Amino acid sequence: MPSRVQRAVSNAMSATNERYPAANTMVIFGASGDLTNRKLIPALYNLAADGFLPKDFAVIGFARRAKTDESYRDETYEAVKEFSRSKPINETVWQDFAQRLHYAQSDYGNPDDYEALNVRLQEIDKAHGTLGNRLYYLATPPEAYRTIIEHIGRSSLCKDCQGSWARIIVEKPFGNDLESARELNTHTHQWFREDQIYRIDHYLGKETVQNILVFRFANGIYEPIWNRRYVDHVQITVAEDIGVGNRGSYYDHAGVVRDIIQNHMLQLVALTAMEPPVEFAADDVRNEKVKVMKALRVDSSRGDGTIRGQYGPGKSGNALVKGYTQEEGVPPESATETYLAMKLFIDNWRWAGVPFYVRSGKRLPKRVTEIAIQFKMPPLLLFSDKMGQQIEPNTLALNIQPDEGISLKFGSKVPGSGEKIMPVIMDFKYGESFNVPAPDAYERLLLDCMLGDSTLFTRSDEVETAWAILDPVLQKWERGTGSFIELYRAGTWGPKQADDFIRADGREWRVL
Ligand SMILES: NC(=O)c1ccc[n+]([C@@H]2O[C@H](COP(=O)([O-])OP(=O)(O)OC[C@H]3O[C@@H](n4cnc5c(N)ncnc54)[C@H](OP(=O)(O)O)[C@@H]3O)[C@@H](O)[C@H]2O)c1
Image (cartoon, rainbow, N blue to C red; front, side, top):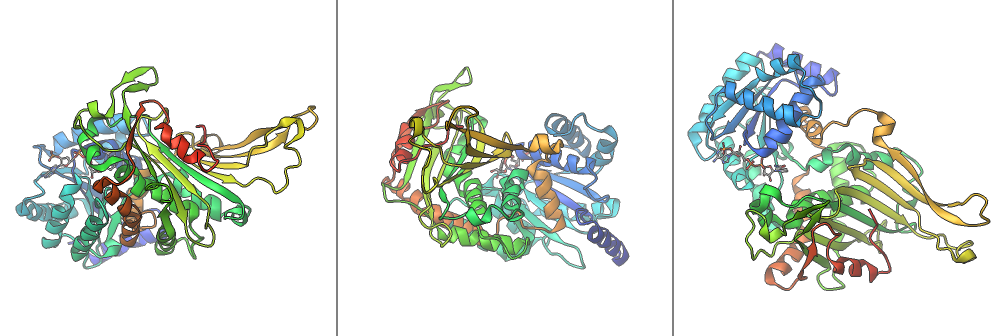
């Protein structure tokens, strides 16, 4: 067991350097999966390379396939080589990092494997000085969450005692609808306190997503116009150019609502619309997000308020691509939506009557995530009827990915042209202004969890409120009383009905 002095030193180091976590062991359930290889292990390696990982740190990979520590290290080396943001691999950092990686061949349904894990963890505490602090990461199929949580709980692996801590990161999706999310929360709370549970939505780890709050609340000039008096409407787009790839069978149960809208999209809406928190602290920020979500409603003045689509065959760039129902793992008769557009209202004093149009889909023409705030026109159009010109409204675009930045569109006089006005763009680009690569979202979130900072993780009530907004829509679809699924050609901006939908309000989707 680590001594009191060891713990005190580690905690003190952590307290004096606000981004230096205490010693810990991270157990990755799903150690050989796609998420672990593409994101988690490269993120840990980059944290090590940047000096953010504690000196006393270890990983135990938990999965069924037979591996030794050595073969697991060799495999993760290949993953880091392929997926790390910083290349080439720094061999000195790697050598130190690799000897902290361990593998436990285990089945998450087998209680004995948790007892064996407990023994292994104690050995690792001795070997690496990890002080009994545990971080469990559920990178397994969601069906496994309940079982793993229960086994961890029953084997007392979740107890934080004698000054050490135990935390659990649960991947998305957290539940499949409101009822299952509630049930999973109740189940998890049987074994873990809320402050030990970190529900991850990797969008919140993106620098540009965090910058929404910095932009709004660290600058004095935007807040006064960030409301129904000045904003005509808000458009949020989360577009992917890829199809479902080899995740067809997962996606067919999820669809775009469970894959993107319930988590990433509603988080973007909440960050755009929330009130300033009293402090930038986990519960203050999350309280404000929950308030927005409680005031959110899907506008159902026309049909069920949604436009649903599914991609058919078409093009991605110049390549011909399959339609959704021809993809591997997708039943040919599937009625799962790969596109959704809808209009939301936020019934509070700041936003009453301002539509938030959101759209997301797969196999759209490009990969782009953007929040656009379109402002109202000036009250008196002094220049609009001169030379038949149309003045365009001011638009502030927060580009989340891939061209991270912020741009403001405004009208400007064309030089020497009398009173001709043209829209121009004032542009801020992250890459050009800071000239340093942004860390991957998982780096930020893993570090925050080790530091015990849950600001960028979703709280139980937040997850449930998000489901409560969408549940009525999902239920209508299940009963067959919701919107039809319209086919759209791969490589286009979704079904034509989505254009008609926004045009009915006298507005247009932004051209991206
Ligand atoms: N992949 C992504 O980009 C991504 C993005 C966001 C969220 N997520 C979420 O992350 C989670 C993991 O996704 P993934 O794509 O990485 O899944 P995956 O590639 O299917 O990996 C699943 C992992 O679980 C292990 N596993 C399966 N059954 C097991 C059992 N009975 N006992 C022990 N281990 C078992 C597998 O290893 P063995 O076969 O060796 O047991 C494998 O390591 C999912 O909840 C997903 O929704 C994934």
